[in-house]
Image (cartoon, rainbow, N blue to C red):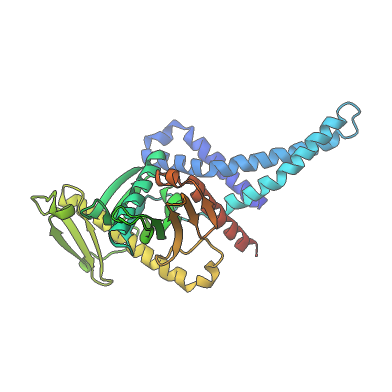
Length: 353
């Protein structure tokens, strides 16, 4: 581990030197790449240097044990440094785990109403609002790609892109079935109904990331419309792409121009094809994945939102919170942090087996 840390520190110093050179900024792409690398390595380097300092404090304190004036203080410093080292070592092991190559990407989120009819569609809208508010709190941007609304303001389905640094690393565990228990707005008897909504989170891929033969893609254009046929475009700018080999269909209708919609639809198609292939490969290694935080498969019930009790339960980590209103207003960090920590612990355990 120490050899690896020394090599990374050497690379970190090289990056810092290059960023301090005026020549680097004549190439904006290179400067952006180096700045990103520096940001990614910084937490590891800070922890490594804190570990080195603790080791140094330990050794220096030990040499002063016999000093009549400084001995007591030295023993206190020795005990503090010794207690700190295991924590720093655990953090170093976590930071050295191989990163998911998709963690830094933007995400495409697809929300679909499941069991529960109109109530499921209304909750799909609530989840869309929740993710939008979470994105805003992190200064990420949200772009709707396509949406199918209901007469009562619910969403049969919606596909949107969240653009932001490390968006996928924070949202990737949201894939799965979200169950809601509440009294629907359409229920006159006050009975609690259970409905489900499906969420899929995909890393946004460019066409160059996934090989797509243009001859395999059929493009159809149509006029986009909102709920009940409202907001109909006068031109056929909405785009539907059909990937013939897989039968996969994607749509984008939110942009004004056909070209922009096609560009977005191609990114969505690339993302879905990438995710399908990844799930196929991961399915072949399902036995190795049992210790991980869910597979993200769409048939998994990952979370329950119980409105009468103001309770949220994430079934993968056994986390229950009684702050449902805050969560629905985008306060997701406590849940996401628990999922990330659990996932890292499982990976660390696997690495040390």
